[in-house]
Length: 283
Image 1: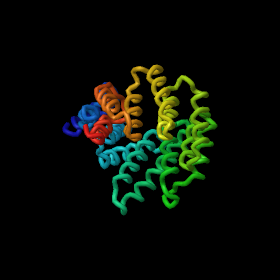
Image 2: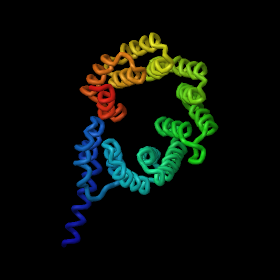
Image 3: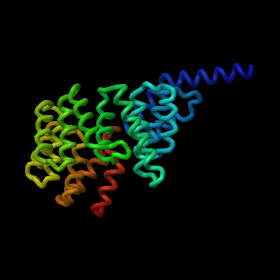
Image 4: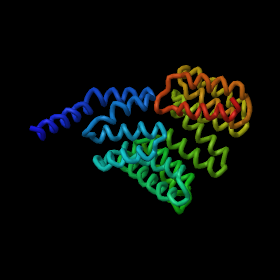
């Protein structure tokens, strides 16, 4: 009888994870209520891959990368062909590489690359994984599997399914080479191919700001704001651009304060980053 009772409890926990609890936890995650989401997921006794994956994402978002790793490794073990889990585990390893010691960082960096490559192989249309892998190739030394040649091959791969994203990837490569005129051309073509995507306008606005072409950058940020008045990310990226250029710091402060008050999603930069930028300019 005791064994039977335990079995019933485990099965009940499993059903709860499959329906309302998991759905509610996902809603909280999408509202950036990560700790509240975890408070629903953590007590579940029998956790399936979806539950473990969401637990890992929540821990990643609050900066508890060791716990994120543990949950996502279990999710990947349960569903090794899930491109999303592999991508998130790659992001987690990458963050641990950034924060690790000279002894641990290389190992985590290698694992990060391997997970990104696996995710892209499993789902070639996964833009997030392809973008993170491109960043890795451009920033990591050859010893860890980085390199321009690999980045170019990936950009060509991206372009076959998404020409606009392929041009954006090539722009990043050209900027890394300091071929700024070519990078600008690729960003403009990406925008021409997808004129309704506000992110393309912001990409070009940020690029021109870094090149000191402030009037053009300002006009593009204004255009982005007209295209998507409720897009909080525009506030953050415009403020960040001002801070990098060391100009319009009062306006940057106002933009960041508006951003912190805005309703964000997991795709937006965390509020903590905005708060850190405010501290950086002495607010």
